[in-house]
Amino acid sequence: MSTQLHYALFTGCTAKQSTPELLSSTLAVADKLGIKITILEEASCCGASHLQDFDEFLAHVLNARNICYAEKLGLTMITICNTCQLNSLMTKHALDSDPDLKARVNEKLAEVGLEYKGTSEIKHFLYTLIDEYGLENIKDKVEVPLSHLNIAPFYGCHNIRPSELQDEANNGENPYNPTSLDNLIDALEGNPINYESKNKCCGFHVELQDNHSSEVLSGNALLDAIDNAADIMVTPCPLCHLKMDTYQDSIAKVMGRDMELPVLHMPQMVALALGCTEKEIGLNFHVQKAKHLYTQAS
Amino acid sequence: MNKTKKITLKTFRFNAETDYLPYYKHYEMEVGKDELILDLLNRIKWEHDGSFSYRRSCRHGICGACGIKVNGKATLACKQNALELVALFGDELVIEPQSKKRAVKDMIIDKEDFWKKHDTVLPYVVTDVDPHPEHETKQSIADFNNFLDSDLCIQCGLCYYSCPAVEVNPDFLGPAAFNSAYRFTVDPRDEASKERLEITGAMGQGVWNCVKCFECAQACPKDINPIEKITKLHNMEFVAGTAESNVATRHAEGFVRSIKKYGLLDEADIVLYSEGYLGMFKHLGTAIDMMKSGKIHWHSGIPFIDSVPKIKNLDEVQKLIEISQTHTL
Image (cartoon, rainbow over all chains, first blue to last red; front, side, top):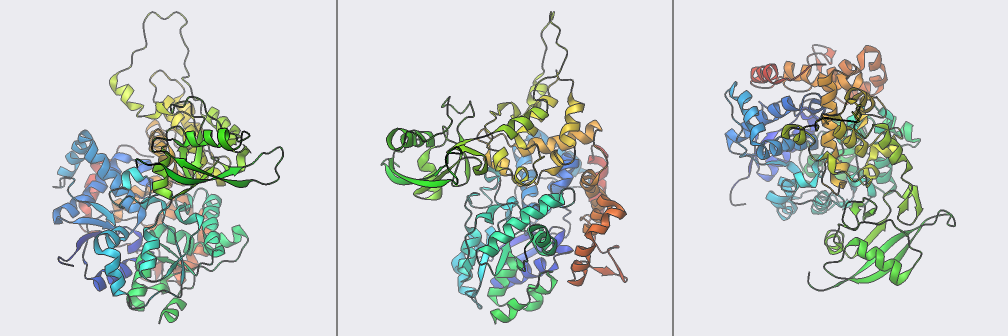
C-alpha cells in the first residue's frame, strides 16, 4: 500500500453496548492491516429505520450531523452495521439530490455550528476491506487459514438493497446473488457454503411487535445454513448477529429443531484468520458457544 | 454483445390439475442482444412446447401481467433484456413463477391473496361526487408532487411476492397495497384518509409489520420504492394522530427519548419503554443469556440502568431534537 488508508468510523449503538466484540475486532483488524481509524465519538444513533418511521425529517437532521463530522476530517465514513450504513446513505442521497431538503436540514445544523456539504463517502467496512485494501493484500496477511471451517455468509438486507442506492458504496453487488462476503471467506481460505437464504431477511426489525414472524425468518436462514453443513455463520450486520445469536434458543423452539450455530461478525472472522488475540476477537460475548473456534484455529 | 449467445432456460413446469409435484425442464437456445425474457417465453411455447403457459398482454410494461422470477430476481418479462440477466447470473437462467407455492400452471399463479389485500385499503378516491359540478377539481403542483411516483403502480405483484413478511405473516397487506393506500390518502379529493390510516396502521396486517428488508424496492419494475411509501404512512399516522400507543409506535418514538438522553440508543430501555414492565417478562430468558455472556453491561451492581455511554457534544443533538422534531406520539 503506497498511502495509508484512513477512515472515520461510525460505530453505531450496538458496538458500544451489546456487541463490544464487534468494535474490538474491527479495531484489531484495522490495526493488523495498518488501516488508520478515527472513531466518530460525536456520532449519534442512525435511527435504525424506526426513528425514520416516527419523524423522518429529524432522522435526516441527526444523520446529516454525523456525516458532518466525517466531512470535517475529510475522510470516508465507514460503518460496521448494515442498518447504520443504509440509514446514513439514505440521508446522504436525500440531501444530495434535493437542494431544498438540504437547505432545510442545514438551517437546523447551523444552530449548532455545522454544515452538511456532501463531501464524504459512506461505505461499510466490508467493502472498504475488499475494494480499497484488496483481497490479495488480505490474503498475504492470513496467519491462521480458516480451511477447517464451512462458513455460511449471511449478507443482511441493508448492505445490498436497494441496489440503486448502494451501488456506489458496494461496488455494484448483485442483491440477488451477492459474492463479496464469499470472496472474503475464500481469501481467508475458509469454505464459503452456498445456500438460498444468504441474501434474505433475519426479521430483526419486527422482533418486538411480530415476534413469530421474526423468529421464523431467522429460523429459516439458520436451518438453511445448518442443512448445508455450515460450521459457523458470518454477517457484516450486528443486528442480524443479535437476532440469530442471542435469540437462537427461542428460534430453535419455534422451528422445532435443535441448533447450535455460532454467528460471527465479519471482522471477528477476519481477526481469527489474521491471528488477533482472543480478547480482541471477543467470542466470549456470544450467547451461542463459539470459544471452541479459538482452539480449532490454533 | 453483438453476437448471439447460447443459454439454457431451466424452466419451472407444473400443472395443478395433473401434476403431483412441479419439475424443471431445460430449453437451450441462441439468444440475441435485443431479445427480452418475454421473447424467450414465447420461443419456449412456439418452438418447444405449446402447452407452456404464462400471462402476457401489453408487451409495454403497463398491464402488469408478465411478472415472473429469473434466478430469484423479480422480473417483468416484457421489460427485461435477456442478455443483461445472463451477464448477472451466467448462462443458465432459472425461470420461475413469482410464487412457486401459488402456481396454477407453469408461470401462472393464483393472485387472489394479492387482490383481496389490495382491495382492503380502499384503493380509490372516496368522496361524494357532485353529479352536476359547476367547476373542475383543481390540484396544485405541490398536491401533485405529493403523490411521488405512487400512481405508477401496475399491480404486477412483483413486490408483494418478493416480500418475506407476506410469506410468514398471512395477514400482512404487503407493499403494493400500502403504495396504493399512500396514493389515495394523499389525494386532495379523498375523504377517507383517517379510515385508510387506521387500516394500514392496524397491528398484524399493517405497516408496523414491515420487516424493512427493501425487497420491494428492489423488485419494483416501475422503480416506485414501496417502502418509501410505507415510511410515509408511518409518519402520517403520527401527524394525523391516528397512531395508537402500542409496542411498535412506542418503539419508534422511544428512539427520540434515548437519543435525547445519550445520543445513542439505550438497547435495554427501548425494550422496556416499548413493551412496558409486563411485556418485559417474555424477554427475560434472552436477557439472562445476554447478561451471562456480558452483552448487557452492569453499572454500580445494577444491570440496564445508565449503562449507555454518552456521545461527545450531546448538547448539539439535544438542541437539534428540540428545534427539528416535527410531532409527538
